[in-house]
Image 1 (cartoon, rainbow, N blue to C red):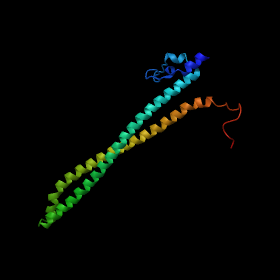
Image 2: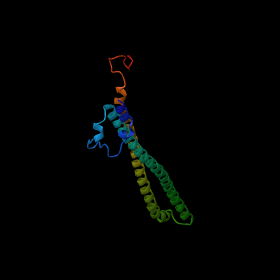
Image 3: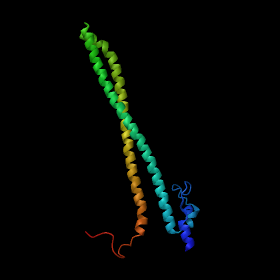
Length: 180
């Protein structure tokens, strides 16, 4: 009994290393075969928790980077909108100046049209590109939120069997649920 207790308390038996358990190939480490059922359960709980914690940390880092990118893109998008507005105002101002110097309305329009069109088309392309990148970034953020939710549900599901093992089975005493 004391040897069983010492093996349960020995942290070396329950320490997880990256190569100990590969769930993709279903290969179990040798030490799991010599462990008791409660030890294996604790080992697997720690393994799943460690894997989920690592994945959650990775997701949070990716999420933060994408939030920063989204914030930068929103600023650039706003600037692109402002630049487009300035280009339109400059076009109108240029036409007004040319007309005030005696040019006909038609001449003023022709003189500013080519320059303004190229500037506006470039600004609109930049704005559209920024908008597409911003939407992509927002989509990735939603994906991270969904992954984080599913990761949380995995942890809850993995912990349920060990939690329920400590409870009295249904019908063998008081039931954990109240009748409604």
